[in-house]
Image (tube, rainbow, N blue to C red; front, side, top):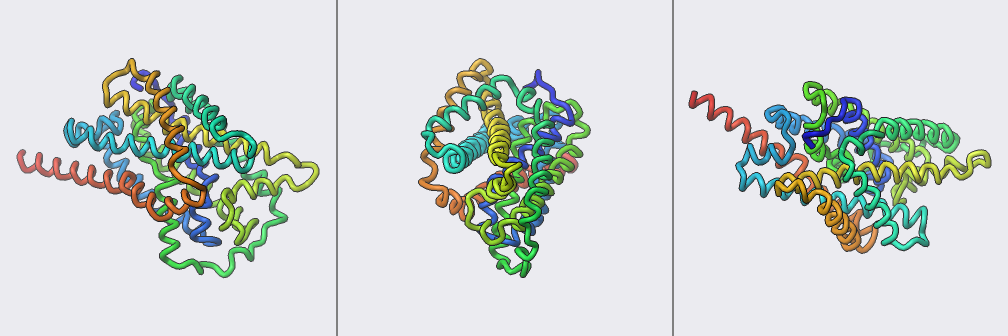
Length: 363
């Protein structure tokens, strides 16, 4: 990681691509907040931005350090390693869950006759190859991916504009406050959880612009998700609550005319491309973190293979069905993810303040 450097724009578009990739997983929120999902995304973005500010505050005290190094310096070697192992477990679970999401999408909507194992192995092989090449190769095409996604969104919005019914939003704010907050909580930690980027931030070549880069890219990605939820609600109405992939259902409607038939395949490739990008980022952070924790650089390539196999196995045994996964995210995982995205960074920030006060009193 120390030998690699990425530019401001590469990190900027990497964050945007990472957030954009979650447009495939809006069913977690739609099934709770229905036609008010767009507001849940706004509310969740506000919560997640507070989490981001806390993480940036912690990073400011440890310039050039990644998450593993920060934990070790802040908590000591033993406690720091335990906390780092918890974070790496988090990245491992996220990698497995997102691999499963990709498999569900391809297996249910694109290649229903293809064996699950073939899809999983093919996908993780490509992600593993990207990880062996390093973070610089992974983020190299982030600008192109982000702009293709923006253009695709604009094009599909135009093509489905005739099917949009703005009455689908009425009456507004009928979702109970409990479900709205539950949906916002999911948004704040699932698509907008940013802790993984603490493993990548130190390799940016302009560290003085790190905070600005994260803040702007965060809001660009967040606004994109809000716009996607508005489009899907306008097109699908209450049906969005019952679809596994509402965004893809909207994309498929864009090819309703003879002139644009087959566009759904193009959009499917785009969504798979974004999933590849996201899993590769998580896979890289996991591999780099374990390698650093073990202090065995020579283990990196064998570790990529071992982790790839474990990610596949874990993704297959996690849940029995898509509905079970959605229920787990809505009722259990959102609280667990909050531990990593908010609670632990907040504890780290408080510990920093206590150490600083202790030094001031000693001086």
